[in-house]
Amino acid sequence: TINFPSLTLAYIGDGVYEMAIRCYLLKQGIRKPEELHHKAVEYVKATFQSRFYHELLPYLSEEEEAVLKRGRNSKSGHQPKHADVQDYRKSTAVEALVGALYLAGRTERLDEVFARLFALIEREERNQSCK
Image 1 (spheres, rainbow, N blue to C red):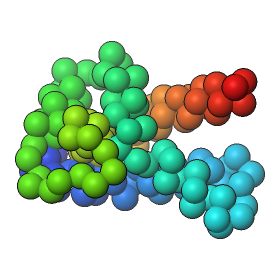
Image 2: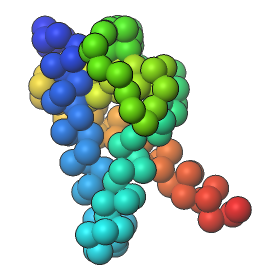
Image 3: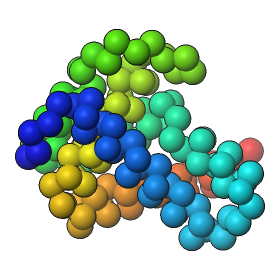
């Protein structure tokens, strides 16, 4: 495992996660910058990442789960403005895991994690279109 503080892993993971979301949206055929931005914001916000945290948890190795929990328990000293503290911590955990996988060069595993993320997004989109 990569031996960086959890918040450092989350910092890197935030960028990797957002880039993955942006590329996914482009592959979905979205081309208008305003629509890209609004969709990306929807999937990078803490409340969505918190849902992804719960989706991902059963599929993690012990080592990955340890990184996730360390990220969730880290104290940033930052008060989230648009999310409750629990969602914010779970989103930090997801970002820490993504950062750890990225820095470890575990691109195949990162692709598996993102495949689960994209499946969750597609389920959300289907559910919204049924309403």
